[in-house]
Image (cartoon, rainbow, N blue to C red; front, side, top):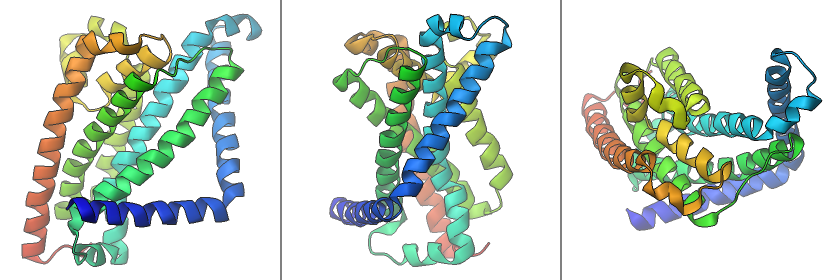
Amino acid sequence: MTMGFFLVMKAELVRTFIIMRRYWFATVLGLVISWGVMMGLIFGFMSAGGGQIADKFAQGEKATTAALGFLIGMFAFGIVGMFTQGLQGMARTGELEQVCMSPHGLVTNFLARSTVSALSSIMTLSILVVLVAATVKGRIHADPVPVLVLLVLTYANLIGFGFMAGGLVLVFKQTGQVAMLIRLALVFLALAASESMESWPAVIRWPAHVLPITDAAVCLKMVIVKGEGIGVFGTPYFAFLLISCFVWTMIGITCFKIRENWSRDKGTMGAY
């Protein structure tokens, strides 16, 4: 499985690099458009309360935090989407059956594909965070060790959740609307998650801790915006992140394998 993972990952990296090089203008234009949309949203929120926008640039930390939360949410939106809308599209076009015939298996293929997609997304979103922070005069802290650890845990958390959702797609196929609502909920949670969430009602706070993006978003905001550094490892949010990472990864991959075997046995892998 390990060798198969690296073989598929190498092929995906080459494919992604070729696409980015061939369509470099589209890549740059996408960054510019994304930056423009982010700044439009931030300026809209800044001006909503009245007063001069220029006077509110002193709140650059708040703007950077909001932008970072939104981008973390979009990262989750994309990763989980690979296992929901991505699987649906593959089943519709017949690609899913072709991947199933690969000697590496579905789990290995999707792990490799999602890893490459995550690396590409992190590069793009990092550039957007820097651009937004520079525009609103906010500060970001690039402490490599905690940022790398948190990104790895966030990715592992999301693919566990994604595998669980992907297992449902293998069985039921038509789950587009529900999957979209779940992905949008992850974006909202990443945007709203903060240290003040401890004041939320318990019926909201505990389900939020269970979902895979909440504690990851809090920890990343603490490190990148507030400069907590390795101190974040001693917070309860990091403990929740570790627990949910282990639980979601184990549950997700197990459920996906069970539903993959069921779909193979019933012959419904390519049915849509």
